[in-house]
Length: 96
Image 1 (spheres, rainbow, N blue to C red):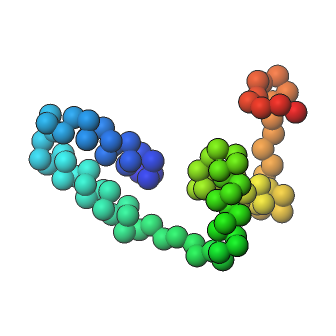
Image 2: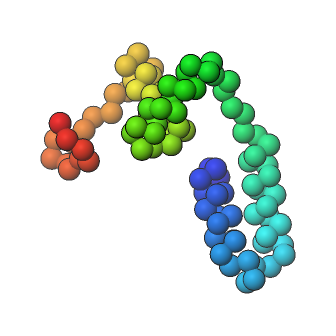
């Protein structure tokens, strides 16, 4: 289960807490605790941290999303991942 799904599950539980059984609530909370224990961050230099935060704010995306984009593009550029192809007939967000 991803962190995003666990967060959504926690939010849903908060919205219907009166209707949830104690056992269901315990399961959700234990999953969340386990996920938090297993999260390890990557320490970055202050200048790198500032640049990431600034770019993420400028792009109006989360820092985590920006890191995923940068890492994926670096892996594609350096042939560690296959390059994604864009269907010429599909609609895209943004402009060229």
